[in-house]
Length: 429
Ligand SMILES: *[C@@H]1O[C@H](CO)[C@@H](O)[C@H](O)[C@H]1NC(C)=O
Ligand SMILES: *[C@@H]1O[C@H](CO)[C@@H](O)[C@H](O)[C@H]1NC(C)=O
Image (tube, rainbow, N blue to C red):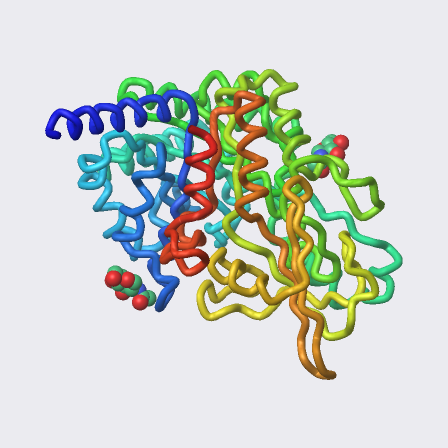
């Protein structure tokens, strides 16, 4: 009996080793989730439940101070969570703990990310030293650069724009203006060179302390503009592509399309033919990235639009009647976004179109005049499993869940906790 238990433990440990070697299961952990109230409050206990399923946990998000370009906490309330890292590291020795910077969570003066790239040697040195100090202080195993680049503009329907000119266009363009570099005009080639240099300098400084350095390519950042792929790959341990949010109610309030299509969708004038997971991964591979260094990002959230009138057509892309982000729900409390436990509960009662390759969406039409309809685009277990097959057949490094706190932490969907994360883990083993 005892022998069996020991044997079981050995097999389990071996299994862990194999997983760590073959595929990454990267768990993004947005620490601001500690500020959510009620059931949506993601606690340290929840984190520990999920850690057994992760090979890496990426703590989001540190910020940069504009005056000095030092890395700083995004919020003081993160500090107690960072302080737990060294304890968790001892308890989960197979998990790597990374600190992530940016992540579109650093909203103040977002152009400082471009300014840091343009800054002089001393300023860059100051940034790098602050990173080393921060990692050492909390005993992180490395840094993830979720670098905030300006986003690609969404494709908008001209005829529709004319009709709804004011509302839709203003919202979109004010979003874009926020991201625009206000002062210096720097060419794209120069920008690419500056980032390559910064990554090289960071790696150089980290080498002695055996720290990891990774890059997260945030949604809708055009890789061909900012990344010299073959050169930066030499200085990065891995790159995670946030391959989702190709369509969001913030980007296109009056139009909806699939959240994260695995393959190219049928051509349409509202669609960017490259806005799909496969195109993005093939771009990086085509530029000489080694497949084992690339991770595919998965959204744990759904995107939600509201509408007041009946839809003229319910086939994607939907461009009639939509009226911007749906109201915030009681859990995540942000307009236009919904966590998986709410998605899985809501879509049971809705008209659903589910396809493991294109993705899934569901809607409820407004029932009576004055009521509001809801449209949700989302991943589910089947579409995530299909993506995992892709990761295996293309021999990619692994998959990353954005975000642990948006998975079904309490098991309200089917009684099982972290069903999305478990799908990733079980499929990749
Ligand atoms: C979330 O839970 C933690 C731990 O139980 C608690 O310290 C924190 O105050 C809670 N946050 C909110 C906003 O309720
Ligand atoms: C990225 O930029 C290139 C060059 O401007 C363009 O050809 C390509 O369509 C863009 N890709 C995406 C996904 O928008």
